[in-house]
Image (spheres, rainbow, N blue to C red):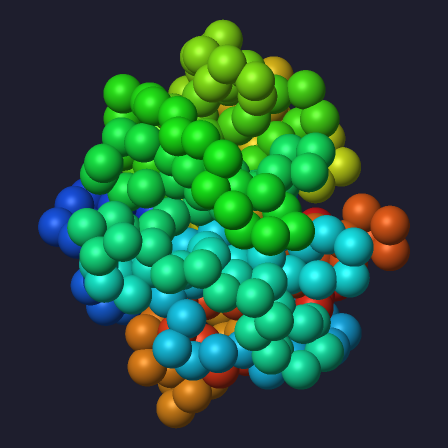
Length: 270
């Protein structure tokens, strides 16, 4: 599973993302065959499945975060968007908040004792009490809302472009942004985010790849190729989306929209 494909990946992603500006629920276009690239290419990591857990196949996963032994998940689709607390081992939904029908739920993250959830096109987000899911307040942003995470100091947000925005976690004002590039090529369709050991991990919508991004420069410092993670016969919606990290036990969890499984993975060396 371990190989170098840097320029090949950038080419594939450019092909994929140029064709994916229509809507959030389209099926994934097949990826062209990869070809080896020069030794100075961006590293590509394979994976090993450590554990497999049940996942609600009706959950159109838009955001995922792990905290204190539980998963918190945001799901999308108008009229079906939710915020959930999920038991990892069983996939059981322990708490569920259904959003008003006019909202298409997107990324989620935890800040202190609150849960934050973005909305796709409404240019607002919601802040909930983490324990009760009581809606505490709204906040505004000028772009679409896709993914959100934090680095312990700032919120980090994606909007489906190549930009990542850094926000004050208390006022939600933008305090900076970076453009994500690999070898000078902008990487668009950045979706669900997770901050892991000093890097930003980002699903690239409608691809099998997670980008590992330097928060200081925006450069892609590595790719994770998750091709083959879920067999085709188990897919009803084939878009990979959802990254969560257990910092205490150094565990990475990944899933996709309407996938029946959630996976704990370990990365292979580049």
